Structures are given as C-alpha cells and as structure tokens.
Amino acid sequence: MAVADELNVVLTRMRTAVPELSAALVATTDGLPVAHSLNSGDANRLAAMAATALGLGRRICETFGGGEFRETSVSGLLGQMYIYSAGPKAVLGVVARPGANVGLIHLEAREGASEIAQILQQR
Image 1 (cartoon, rainbow, N blue to C red):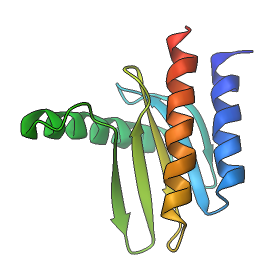
Image 2 (image 1 turned 90 degrees about the vertical axis):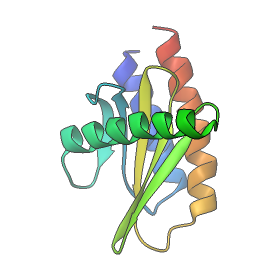
Image 3 (image 1 turned 45 degrees about the vertical axis):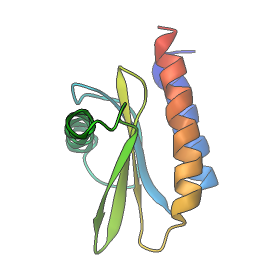
Image 4 (image 1 turned 30 degrees about the vertical axis):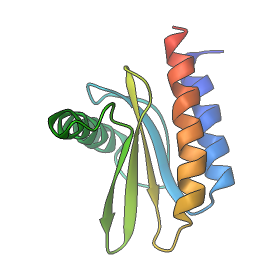
C-alpha cells in the first residue's frame, strides 16, 4: 500500500470516530500536504500553516524549557484547528466545528499522530 493510502486510512478512521471534524490532513514539516480529507478549504494552505504552527510551537517549547513539542490549537468563532506533532517528519492537523468534543478529538488525534509517525518512520 502506498504511503498516502496508509495515511488516508488513518485520517478516515479519525473522521469516522469524530464526526465533528470537517478536515484532517498530514503535511511535511516543510508544509507540503501528504494526505488529506477535507470538506472544504485548500489543503496546500492548511498544510503550510500547520507546519508553521508546528515550527513555532517547537521554538516556544524550546524557549521555555517545555521539552518536546506535542500539540497546539487555534480557536475561532466558527471552529478550531488542532495541530499535533507526528514524529520528526510530519504534522497532523484537524479542523473541528464549534461544540465538538475536544476530549474525543485529542484521544483520536494523538493516537493518529503516533500511527502517522510510525508509518513515515518505516519509509
């Protein structure tokens, strides 16, 4: 199975487990989309912004001595984006509608990020 196909299986499973997710994507740390499942939006832009947030999060953690960066979020009036480190090569971003179950999002996305890191590590 191709890498993108394996990653899309992970994204599909997350979106099935958390119906409030309107988007999920995997991007390289350079901001290039590798796999995505979007209802709308531009995968290229979301990938670039998720990678930028990952880089900034890593720098912030480094500056305050927080250890290895894991995740961050951006909240707006109409939704949230959660960004997770997926190993040294990738970032996972998920977009949720307002009122989504944040605990369930974190549970599924943290597991997904770990699985994504393992898939990419094998390549």
